[in-house]
Image (cartoon, rainbow, N blue to C red; front, side, top):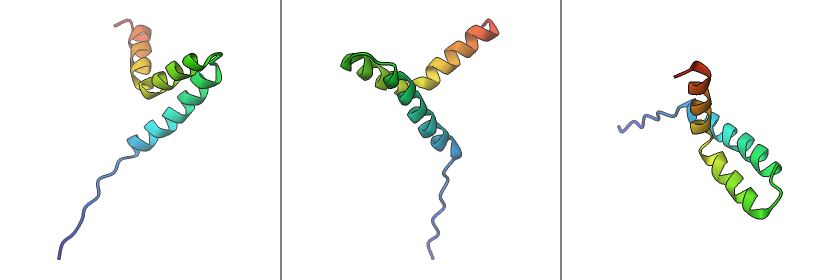
Length: 60
């Protein structure tokens, strides 16, 4: 018998929810098409912005 073990984490779901929230925020504030494209790209890398701002807040 073959058993499949699935190791899925909830962090990927958190990233997806965060992506949609960030995309809504950035694209919703876009005035032009290219600002919307930049907003989409920012939504892809939102964790990097979060960690950067956390480091600034902690004074690191």
